[in-house]
Image (tube, rainbow, N blue to C red; front, side):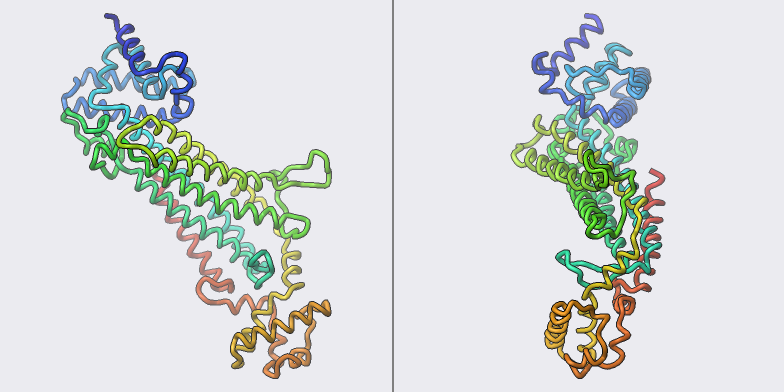
Length: 468
């Protein structure tokens, strides 16, 4: 029998019939793992030779063929065939073209079941590092804009109602903290994915004298799976990855929502760069925050992938089931969407224009010092709840008279409490902010310390991952 006939018999035995090729094929999705698949196959080939399961001569031929295929794929000259279902069978089939029946030795002591999850774990580890890098870049952008706006004052909101004065730097550093948690989650996902599965076989291990410890070291895995059945069917790390993406997208969506509100004509706190906004097709006066809106909109797709993965796994008996072919669709789409949104959010924040005067005016023309006035009375000995009622009545009266707190004289204050003294007139937005000097507060010295800490954290993260 010729080499070609052997290959044809082999590929037909693992593929569906032509009518169903499109339904069972995953090649359009999983071909982006070609580097991981070839790296894994080369390591597996080396191990087979090391353990004298194949000869050194066969090893060299297989590796040469795999490297040739890698060049073909990277140069877009490789012909992907949906009839061969997935990336693994496409590469192995092409290997037959290059080296003949020796290609059949590549799959010794290996199943597609442990092969595919090894590829996905390597891809996930690589992508976690990319995600951590992009998160760090966005964190740095928030730190830079915060440094420029330590003295920029604006209202802080609860329920989208003006609450207390804050510095804009403090506000932006809140997003830094959200992103720090996101970064930590991807570090945890990296650890979850950092388990070497090769050697698990189809489900029960392999009967060859494989060296799994050597393979783990060669493929840069820190751990080796302890149970072959769990190894080939475990996709928890994918759910953890998409969950990390979902929380990150939640934070990016919250940022986008704020950007959308702040750029509205009603607020005018900021102006989004023309590079990250679009004109109206009908109304020439408008610039729409479309990029921020799209981040907000794309968040739902990532959430959907998370639910999709949970739904796939919830009903699967051990071990491998074809349902798991759908895992990569959710994984790859979530990663791609999240990284694109990180880039867009970074572009928005780097090119944003802050309208400091409007922010300050909004804070001044409000009652956001009410809490500070209540605290003033508390420090004079009045219980907070009694002080709260006094200041509530004061602000209600001012609203009726269309007056601001800044217009009050000491005599006006004394109408509400004899505990008010001349020093109440020294109360201002700045003094209110500076009084919030507890750890984590908005006072300047606290914000400056937070900035120093943030820059150190970013530097450490960058140093830890740039070698990867």
